[in-house]
Amino acid sequence: MPNNEQKISLLSRYQRLIKIAGDLTSKLDLDILLLEIVKAAADITGAEAASILLYDAVKEELYFQAATNLDTAMRGMIVPLHNSIAGWIVRNREPIIIDNPQEDDRHFQPVGKATQLPSRSLLGVPLITKEKMIGVLEAINKKTGVFTLEDQEVLIALGSQAAVAIENSRLFQQSDLIGEFVHELRTPLSSLSAATHLLRHPRASQEQKDKMFVVLETEINRLAEMSTSFLDLARMESGRSQFKFEKLDLRSLLRECSDLVEKEAKDKRLDISLEISEYLPDVYGDHDKMKQAIINLLSNAIKYNKEEGQIILRGEGVPDKKEILIMVSDTGVGISEEHIEHIFEKFYRVPTYSDKVSGTGLGLAVVEQIIDGHGGYITVESEFGIGTTFAIHLPSSE
Ligand SMILES: Nc1ncnc2c1ncn2[C@@H]1O[C@H](COP(=O)(O)OP(=O)(O)OP(=O)(O)O)[C@@H](O)[C@H]1O
Ligand SMILES: [Mg+2]
Picture 1 (cartoon, rainbow, N blue to C red):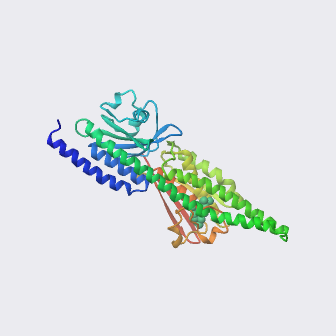
Picture 2 (spheres, rainbow, N blue to C red):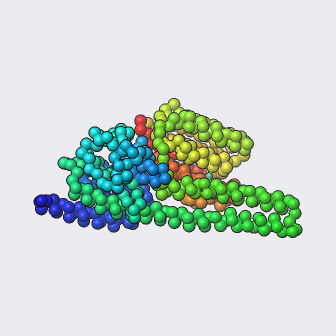
Picture 3 (cartoon, helix red, strand yellow):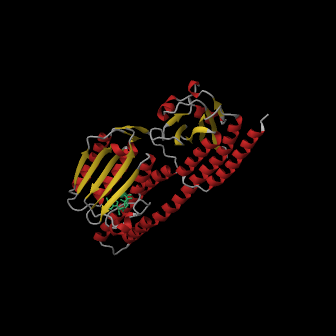
């Protein structure tokens, strides 16, 4: 029989839960929402830490997306459906309490290593909404005593609220993005339609026709690029895109990026140089995504540069700040004060150049999402007419 003290504590835990549930439904940013959920999970179960693994039904994999103690080595880490406790929860659609997870056959060893948090006890519940498996919510290490069925009960209650909130946030982000995308489709579509119209015109000269073919080509390419970038963004924003974290050798990554754009730069008579400081520790990151972020910045440095301008790609470690910097500087047109605060917004392009230089306005939004997924941030400094420097700041584990 639970004594009075326990009864009160269960009641107060439910009261906390009701408040949390109310807060959750108002959070539409997925990352913020997930962080709130794990904090609440650790709190109401009296655990040292908590984490969320999301389920990718297509690949039949789970991956870490949020934790109270998440470090970059762990984010995106894939956990197999078989041979893991979280996988067991997904397959059985049942909660579980394990007192000594490290000795359990299902324990997936790499996680313990990455978190450096030896797990003494674990309570995990499935996140399910309308029969759809969303993922797993786990509380790790009960601070005093062991996880009880009462802990399990409140975590299940939190989990069911959390699952709905996660679905809502995903749907909201998708509908928001689709609206923007459709809006942005109108401009290239009306150019395409005007161009085809002119091509049909009986009195159009060959010269006019040739011009229109160029318009068609450019707009079609732009639409194709827009679709790709847009899909990347949508996947990252909704947390469906997995980051495959591994140790990255930045020296070779930066070299790879500079080699890739070298020809394009030379064709425009731009000088591109690579600077690598002596101290440049490895970082954990997703190779392809990091490469894409750097290439996007280099592509801007090329596109918005001046005749015979310069580009510097630089990598350096900042030991005082435990940070790694990847910088892309150019001697280009620069960005004035009024525009600089908008350049990371989706589809935003500085009007002066948008007619002369082709682009979708999604490049920097993609970069920002990628860097965010690595636990870093990006800064920009620019002087109008002189040039611009973008700096990617990544946390260094050394
Ligand atoms: N290095 C730079 N120098 C000057 N302006 C820049 C620079 N980088 C970005 N901008 C400005 O910021 C805007 C947004 O950049 P972003 O990379 O997001 O889009 P884009 O280059 O126009 O298109 P996309 O990258 O999708 O092809 C650009 O249109 C440009 O006006
Ligand atoms: Mg760009």
